[in-house]
Length: 151
Ligand code: UDP
Ligand code: MG
Image 1 (cartoon, rainbow, N blue to C red):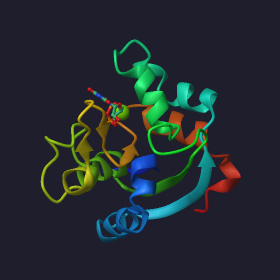
Image 2: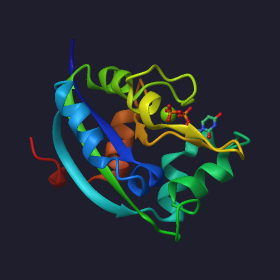
Image 3: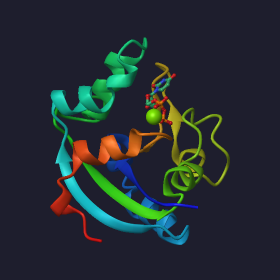
């Protein structure tokens, strides 16, 4: 067991559908501690940096549009970014969040409860959570200044 931090984003569909409170509640109940939070208008540059590892995927351009709120209103739509801390937080938060594909996400996970695939095939899976390996540290550094974390 290791004390870890991980990045969570309430994606534009989660914002539009007013799911922020529920996400916070589920992470609270799972025992994770919020150590950072802010509202962010996602620039093109930030979106592309955040999803850099997926730039060769066929869904990449739609993913950039999605995370910038272009499917849910204006460009630079606001999202909320959180850092959560806890024992094995990266894997633990991913469990609470559920699988990437909302159709495959287990019932009771955030994505299993609230995610959907649109008729155009876009995954709307409510939240982002850092994956295993160096991802969490890199993402926290991209989205937060060290002094914005309260530990
Ligand atoms: N995504 C998609 N179609 C796919 C795979 C991923 O639209 O076939 C989107 C989806 O919004 C996902 C994001 O790309 O959350 C990042 O993909 P990743 O494989 O990192 O999934 P995650 O870590 O979010 O579970
Ligand atoms: Mg990922």
